[in-house]
Image (cartoon, rainbow, N blue to C red; front, side):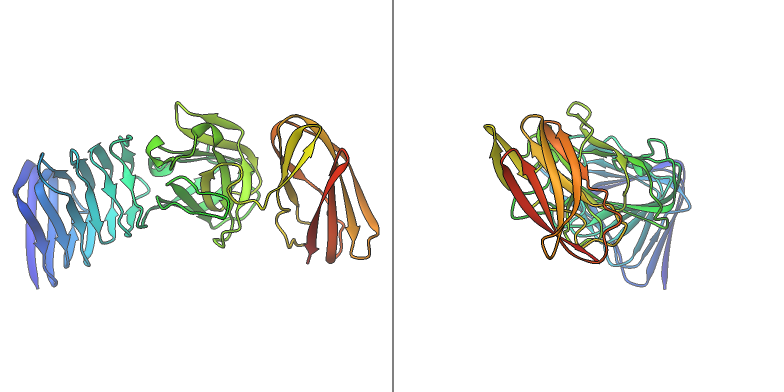
Length: 370
């Protein structure tokens, strides 16, 4: 086995060429000390072992005008402390999974995940992401961070852009951020998502703030963005709406969330619901599907309704024989987004028909209670 040992003591090690710094299978490169290792026009490909975790070295990737994209990765185990991108008009392309124990600093150029993952230490941070210098990843790949979140208050682990507030202890929480777009029959999402998982499943009573960049909007207007959540990865998208949009600070937020885990995306309000539209008094009302459906007994059931103006609706529930089981009081809807909690904890297992009536118009939805 071959070993290469670099020790930097407040120094700078610079490589300048148009080539690769290649670590062959069976070879080990260990980096100690502090300072910068500048890779100018050089890709770093590790097919052996690269261990710089015990140092405070910054790997600085630099591209000059007229050069090309650089690669970082390989099939070997790569553990790096800090990375800085100064790629000008070029990108750093990931070529294998890597571990980062420190910060990833963006000066210029993008960091393309290219189908691979970055495992970020809980104490690591993304620093300086901008419209012209950030993570991208149309081919897949994720930035992954796991940390303990106990009664978090505006916690944004790793500065990944998923900000969480909750009075509950969420325990060991994994946040994955990716940049692939997803599509439905009704539309597309922006080019960013978060996947949240946790060891705790208690009601978080949470506030979730989703940060984005304008370059990720995928043609969607920022003033049309709403939150959507897929709880189990089966593309069963649940409309979560929004309580605040801030186009200047580039985030969408929702408060009072009773569920936090799953895949979160930003899209417009018609992204995934099987929407039916009716007209009442010259205004259009869009009514989505009940969810969850099927539903377990005693679980809460939601109905998304989008109205152009405020109006009143009534909801009735019938059993499979057509008998009226529940006459839910009339509801005053606000203009735009409404998420109605039907609150029917006493329904026994079986099939039900839910009638939604506005004026003289009505729609029916089938509900299965398990």
